[in-house]
Length: 72
Image (cartoon, rainbow, N blue to C red):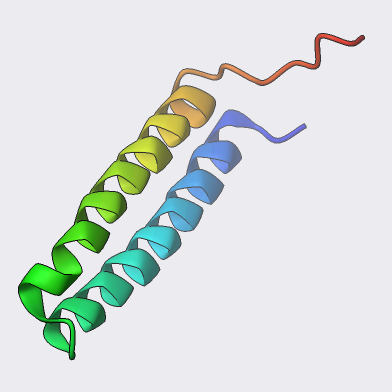
């Protein structure tokens, strides 16, 4: 298993990469042909998904809760 510092560092790097990619994609959609109002639904989805990603990072890496398989 990974140590807690390694888990936090890997989680930060992964979450940062996902954030950079998704925000860049949303920015390019909004400034391109779709315009602001055409890209607004995508921005709503991006904010929701990034909220889920940050919550998962906090729960998994900072609090240390792990997923367990209930099947045994």
